[in-house]
Image 1 (spheres, rainbow, N blue to C red):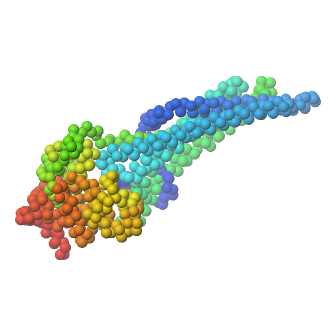
Image 2: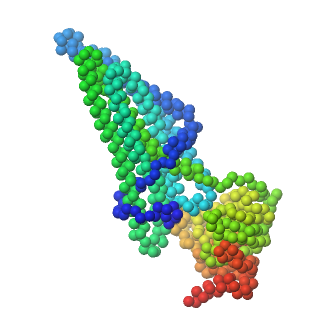
Image 3: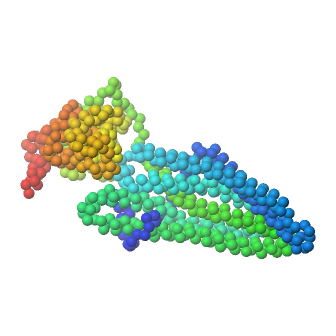
Length: 622
């Protein structure tokens, strides 16, 4: 389990989970206003389109607002006609006039709908583009983050920010902005119309508003921390699932299915508990708003009837005013809902912007540019008093110094945790040294750009990595402009051609996402072929033959010996029999070189290397 998951690996409420999308109690958004401001900054390139959307939304609202006032005229016409008929007058309902009013009303609503469609179409394009920009920024950000970030954050959490959080932003942007504009316009327009009908009834309607605002603020304040937790811990749950799925073979082998399920249920139970709280609290808003609205309707109807009996209000006026009150409370309700949604949006935006603002690898001003014409690299490497620790307070490489000449094969040996792989990571500049320097041909590697530096090196790791594409393209990853013939030649040099041709579709067989349709040893051979194709100046092999059988290992060693000729090579090996022909063997223990020399020289010393070498045979004989 990674550090990010261990951080929350504490005793929690047990029980069976009851919902995958539930939430865990968490803190409020660290900076709600700041997150919204940053989101607005991402919308700034679309300010003119958003201005058009605002105008269209306002026009749509204006035409919609005029509807009840015009409908009131039709109501008055019908009411007057009926009253005339009751009084015995020959003048009844003027259906021609009523028809004209209704046609005008239909036209207004059609125009309002057209404006609504237009602003919706434009806003959808804006929100989709914002989503594209954010995902693009995240994808580029990933390539600029230092390796230490991924050592401390789960893959599932990163994926959650790219997918769940960005999707939340897209969905809410598409709806919330237009709703806010529409709601504000309707509130202002309706208020004017209500005042034009009756100022006294308007005051009664407005008296209900503070109660509505208090309910909204109360609900938002109570629910915010749970919406923050929704986005925060969804990433943690995804991280756990991704780890368990990626390691399902190990889980099966050690019969840890129950433990993995229990851990998932613990997360899910807590997500469920806080999830229903957030939904329950936010769900209370609508019933409370309806209660307040209905209470207001009762008071307005009573007051309207009183004013009608005094001749200060018409029946159509009452009907229009009630419609306006409903229109007035509707945008208040919408804003309340939007405010609720904005809590989710702010939480999602905060997580996205937190990721985008993570400390990147420091910008480089390379002092040395690699060019075959200007600076041919020969491959001389020097470690000069190197000190390094993943935590600056815990130094694990202490005063490491070594001089490697071009074309030499250097073996790094030592017990697990001695610092062998760390030395290679420093050479590749996955991390920078805390003190001292690493030089290539006399140039500090920090004077090169990382791209230039890594272009000099080919690397084969113990943990293989292949992606979902053909075998041909996986090998070609070492040099993208390589021809098919060069790819096949590299495969032959890596002793991989024979098994590749025995596979279905040969070099065009697609490796699945888990790379489970080829064996571990075959995967290793493909990564070796990739390194051979890259034709590096410096070759790094980190337990490159650990996953192949003895016969294949011998064949690979022959290919590697040919590949290493004229190249500086660093070989990390636990099976010391594979590095007996190394030009120099560096024995590491606790980050220090305790012995160095050739295989024969070190055996004669009868020291650290000798004990390490013969211990393998002791274990084999037990």
